Every structure is written in C-alpha cells, then in structure tokens.
Amino acid sequence: MTIPPFTAFDGKLMVCYGQAYVLSAECEMLMPEDAFAGQRNGLGAAAVSGGLFLVTGLHTGLNSANISLENSDLA
Image (cartoon, rainbow, N blue to C red; front, top):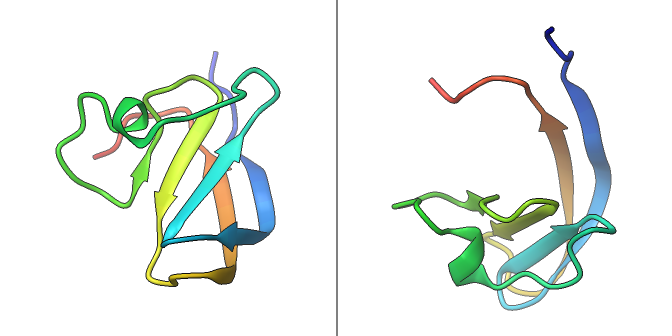
C-alpha cells in the first residue's frame, strides 16, 4: 500500500543558533547527535522517530518552512 505524501508542517519556525526542531507528541526531546545517527552530512536529520532537527542559514529569528513527508527512499 502506498501512502500519498502529505504536508506535516507549513509555517514559521523559530530558529536559535541556526537550529530548528520539529517535534511530534511522541518526541519530547531531540539531541542533534541522535538525530544525525547514521548520517554523514545534510541540513536535516530525522533518525529519531517523531523528531526532525534542521540547520538553517539564519542565526536567530523566524524562518519559513514547508515539511512534506514522502513514502520513499531518497534517490
């Protein structure tokens, strides 16, 4: 069964020190080293279920973000 992609978040994220976190109810806390586990590079990390850690070019302030969930591996 294929699950169609859907938008998980579309709005403004508060960025502090170039970092932003998107957490579901099941993920109360997210450490960057856990989020990037098994990953060698990238601006986003999602190794922890229910959590997304993002690195931005903005140091502090509001940053627009649109986060879509896909049911496929990256090419």
